[in-house]
Image 1 (cartoon, rainbow, N blue to C red):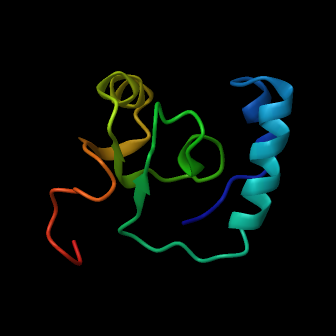
Image 2: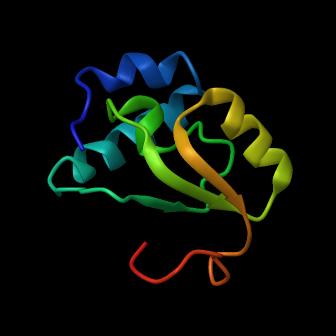
Length: 97
């Protein structure tokens, strides 16, 4: 997964300043790790705070969340290839998928 540059500007257009600063710090930490597909975002919520929205140039393979309303918004943002409504311990996918 390749990360975007200048993510603070992008976050500031989406969320309040304190949250944007928090996400930028998290994002700096993430850039130190190699994320290879398939990538699963457990508790993806509405997708606003995902690595994808501001940090990565590619979509996350799968996002899961137990709240269908959050997933509806995540679908609208188009940052995931697949979204599943379930609890984190009940993902309906086979092991190693």
